[in-house]
Every structure is written in C-alpha cells, then in structure tokens.
Image 1 (tube, rainbow, N blue to C red):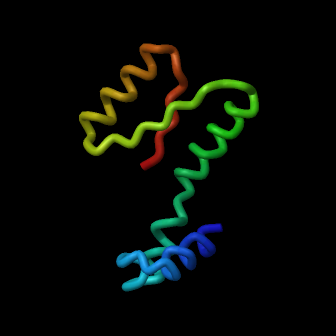
Image 2 (spheres, one colour):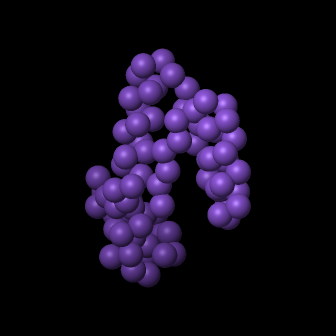
Length: 79
C-alpha cells in the first residue's frame, strides 16, 4: 500500500516525491500510523467516536493529550 501511495505522489508531481521516489516511499510507509488507523477503524465499527489531532508543536501535542485524557478518551499517538 505504501508503494502505491508513493507511486501516486510521484505521478501527481508532488515535488518531494518527484525529486526522490525513494523518499516518497519512506514518507508513505509509516508503521506507527497503521496502528493509529487500525484503532480508529475498530472504534468506528463499534460505533464509537474518534478524534484525530495534528499538532504542530510539542506543546500543542501535550495539550491535546491532556484534554483528551481529561475527557475520558483513549489516546493513541504516532510519531
């Protein structure tokens, strides 16, 4: 699946992918994200909610984790 995503990025002309197809493959092959995605799918199938946050700094990440835990949510993180 990572190879297909990388090939798509190269074909679409994404600058980072077009200049280095190997880098594109590495950017799309993230085992840590697979764990998060599988968890979201399981919860969704069980009728539960999922909140996905994309913090841009360590401080935002810590605030998001703290608020989600305070609300009683399970927190699963990728890199």
